[in-house]
Image (cartoon, rainbow over all chains, first blue to last red; front, side, top):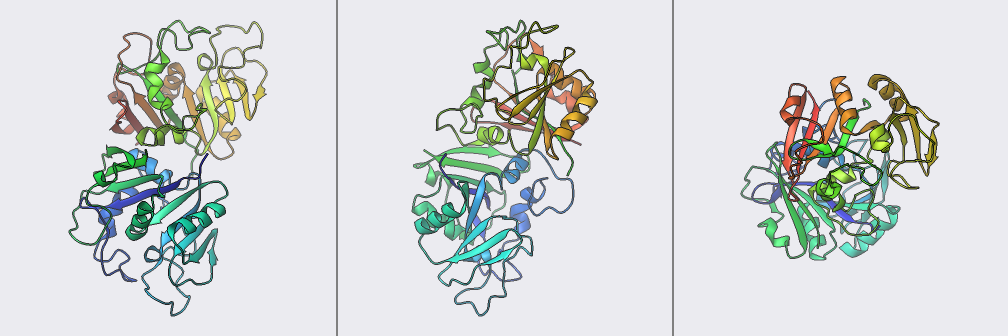
Length: 214
Length: 214
């Protein structure tokens, strides 16, 4: 079995926007209220950050419960890792996720400003300054035969799509229009030359878009 | 986390029928052509019996790929295990699945005619003459903290529903009408007093019904 590169549970607005501009420490999604985009995931029983019992076990839960299945590494952009830009002033920032990040695998952060790797619980963050194909090769080696998750954000996903390295992609489209921000696509149909697409409306209001390579 | 009892990928016709009458060695689903019911699952990349590469990775694949996730044991009725009825004439029959059954866990076969347990690859079949609650207790102990799959057939699922022991249930409804046979329900709405329900039409033509306890 090949090691797939998979995008999972990546959520955009009805006009294709995944995050706002002006990301800051206080507002990781910039001017976008993340609750309006990710509410569908937070309501499920398998949401990785869930701390209480309960949650739905319907369609949306199939997507959140698939998050760790057969994933051996994650690749993310620096802007998903944190709000800083340019050279690191220090290494105090260790991501948004606290002492128990939800990844539980090696994570490769793409940045022009590498810093030493560090480990929180069972997640180790590596910082790499390389092109998508090279980073994917490193992540595959670290994944021990399993798949690699492409965690985002938009800029990183676009780079891997442009390099034709993405195998499957689950994009949830929320019924909210944002107008401006970091845009994944003008329309999902832009990808139909290379991907099959199932469009699946969920009772929660989001529409799941499932792409897999032709 | 509780150990759930889960029905997965159980397929019925549009009139609620899961298997034909007159099951025989040559026709495990009686007068029903299983290809008409299960074609949706066989077309997916994660179908457990798939021997070649390929297959779809859209919506239907989320259901087939969820088959082994966090499952530690299966319970099935004797009529899923084989076509024989009454006392065993001998113990030569070892199930429909060949030397490499797709379960990879302990399997508890409910029967009034127990026989010695046996192992094929990493699947061990146990034969138990007990009521649903007792069998579920045995399966949970064997599952090592994981969930238990309720594999069917119809009669077995009905028994566990009547005893209110089922936690989640995925029933795929195929767009084919069979008229007669072993019937799961008159309508899925019969279960709405106890379960939430997401109804999800798939591009393949089946409609996934996802139940979880209220």
